[in-house]
Each structure stands twice: as C-alpha cells, then as structure tokens.
Image (cartoon, rainbow, N blue to C red):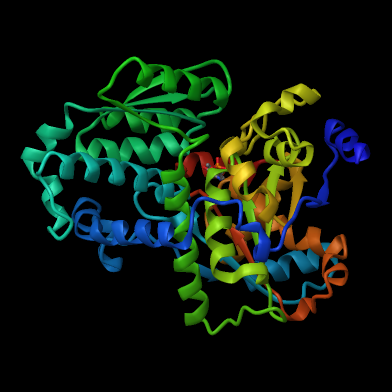
Length: 427
Ligand SMILES: *Cc1c(COP(=O)(O)O)cnc(C)c1O
C-alpha cells in the first residue's frame, strides 16, 4: 500500500485497481441520489431546448440539445499500435465533448445545466415562467431585466468559468469568475469580452473557489456554483450517460457482462467524471468499468480515495506541485462529495506524465482530425494502461469483446494559434 504512495510522491506513472471498489449491487446503497434525479435533470434540459436553440444557433441541428458525437477512432488506435508495436483488441471510440456546442468542453454539461436550473427556479418562484411554457421567452427583455438583479460567482481553472460566463451572460446575470493561476489568457479575454468580471489569483484552484464562495456568502443575491460540492452540477454531468446509452444503441454496440464498456475519464476536482460515473453505473451496472485519469503532479482524487481522506488531503501534502500542462486537471484537493459518493464505484485510477499528453493530442489530430486539449488527451492512454497491466486477464474479460470510450473533455474553443503551438511542441 505504502509503495503506491511512495511512487506517487516520486511522480511515477501509476495504475491502481481501486481496493475500495464495490459492485453496483451494494455500492448504490450509500447514495442519496437516484436515477429519478438524473431523469429530472434530463427533463429540465429538454424544457430548455427551445431556449438553447435560439440563443446558440450552432445547436439548431440538434434542436437545442447540447450533445457531442461518439466517434470511431480506430485510425488513431492503429497509429498507437504501430508506434508501440502492440495489438489493441476491441472497439475504440472517443466521446467528443471537446466539440460540445456552446463552450467546447464537458463543462457545457454541468456548468450550463446548473445555471439553467437556477434561472428556472428564479423565474418560476417569481411567477414569470411555467414548466410547459416555451422557454425561449427567457431571452425576452423582461427576463433580461429580471436576471440582471442577480449575481453568479464561480471559481475555476478555466473551462467551468467559461461555460458559466457564456450562459450567464446570455441570460444577463452578473457573473464573476474567480480564476486560478492555471487559467489561460484567451479564456479570460473571451469572458471579459462578454461582460463577465474575471478576478485573477496567483494561486491554484482551491483558492479561486474559496474566493468565489466568500463573495457569495456576503450577498444573498449572489448564487455560488460550488464545483466542489454541487449535486446540481453532478446531475448535469450524469445526464451524459443517458445520451451515451442511445449512441451505443444506434451503433449497435452491445454492453453486457461479456461485452464490457471501458470508460476513461480525465479528473480534476471530480465533478464531471464523478457525475458521468454515477450515470453510467446506474445504467450499465457492473458492465461498465470506469477509470479516472490524472496527471502525475495532480492525482488528487486518486490520493483522496486511496487514503480515504478525500477533501482532507491535498497533493501538496505529499510534496507534489499541482503544476501541469493539463490545466483542466490542475486541482490539488479533490471534491469530498464526489469521493464519498462514487469513489467506491470507480474501478481504477491511472496517472500520466505531461510529456505523454502532446503525442496523444497530435496523433488524434493527424489521424482523426479532432482537436482536443492536453487535459482530454490523458483519456487516450487508458487502453494501453489496462493492456499493459493485464487488467483483462485479471477480470476474466475477453479483450476482443470490450468497447473502449475515451472521454475527450475539451478542446474545440482553443484558439488555432495556441493549438498550433501544441502541434509543434517537441515533446
Ligand atoms: C473540468 C475539466 C475536466 C475535469 O472535470 P472535473 O469536474 O474538474 O473533475 C477534465 N477535462 C477538462 C478539459 C476540463 O475542463
């Protein structure tokens, strides 16, 4: 056990089969959330479709549904096989949240959902809206005036702030984003151009969140999006599982005990991968195997679940820096809510050095023409790591029957110039 901590301290790349893992037959007993909660979130997103379609014309083709494609990436996988001189059995897909409309990252699920939820609550409480109305009326001036009395605060490494700033400014809320030092300049500039207040901190994510919380504590008209503890955010992410289920069905991909689904989720504070895990386990039970992926300098959820200390331990406590090229994953202290809610449903964890991220990012761009960011690239390492660690033999799975889904959590909004630098980097 201690040898894992020792290796983590020494920035070794690790694969850990979660020793606290529980089957879904018992693992859900501890949870207060249920499938009905996911369905409720999905229904809310359905009610907002006319609004989203009108506010964001790029969602027109999907009638206001913010959804990404499930993309066959066997070409990229062939590239891995050639480079590594290894055979990769099974089917390979990318869940391309990197191309999600509106904000180009997985945060377009949770972050946007939470603001819609808040706007709906305010409007209904004030008798301005009923659930069976056409929600595109929320774009009318009367609503703009109404929402302008209210403030929203959030702490972020970048992408959450971006999604909340975008949706918040469309609704005409006063949004303040507290950005950690990791946040990229272009994200701050884009937000400011939309009238969002951006506060910058020379410190990491936990500090940015704390400042956001402080702002809201002193003001009853400020709503704080709590990335570390929000059940609403979590449920917004969880709806992804319903969507993935229908996409797999469309592609006639079977998921059962003989044909398991292996899902690789990049993890920062844990809300996005945690919510998706909750949804997927509710739908597929033990037939989905979930792996959280983190940089070797920021393995916060791994550390929290491994030690059982959750939010009471930070990667800095074991001498790591929490400095990583994967800015979306630069979180030192995990969400205690997520660790305690779904930590035991995660099959395994792995860590990766930053120098592996750019080669993955380049390969998928060259072979399948998909633009992802370094944080998302970590998900592409999952299959190699399972194969190298004999996971399939250990679990008695025929690797030829498995379907792999790497969750590409962001990328589309990265400016071309920045992306070009990554492609040309010498890693
Ligand atoms: C936020 C983010 C993640 C991780 O989500 P958490 O909820 O912080 O765990 C992964 N990748 C990208 C690109 C992100 O922006």
